[in-house]
Length: 212
Image 1 (tube, rainbow, N blue to C red):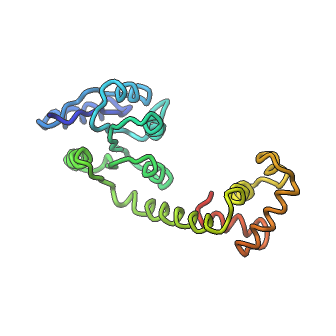
Image 2: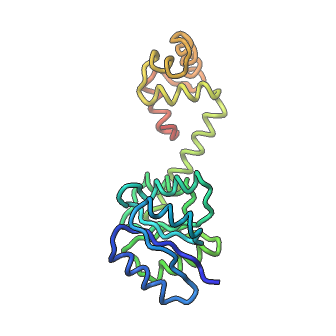
Image 3: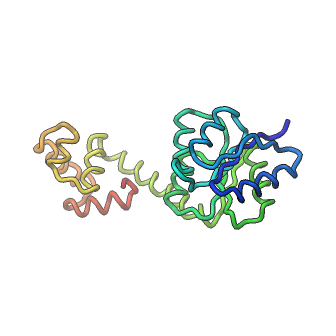
């Protein structure tokens, strides 16, 4: 049974090239071509392809927005991102959204074919230059968050994030529906537990641990 594909890119010339590439291979079937995020979601819902080849930057709903909606709807299609470039924050979000593969457009077309076959078989394919730093950052953030979570209560964690994002005590109190005095008491305990001296040190600590 052929591997069902949906192709999504806002450039017709790229779509034409992708379709020709996969039509040359006997084990693929192109089910739909899409030029924006909304079309892509409709096609994935309708055809339930094995693999979606998705550009990260499209008009209207971006590739990452498509991924978020697919995750929300629990659509089972595996996704390969095909992109000209990907920055660290995009790479981090792609990892969190469980993308199975990333291929840069500058790479040889046959690498994309190999990637899609590997992803369909349950594997992963990440372009090392784009993802090495992103994976390292993600692991550091998760380790830092676990470390703090072992020291602070959930309420104290909330207050750390809000204070570190720049909110004053009154704004934190309003957001959490508690008194300003209670915020001050929580902050006193947080400073003691984390061995920091004031809001600036707390903010730097939170950024270092990946809470922002």
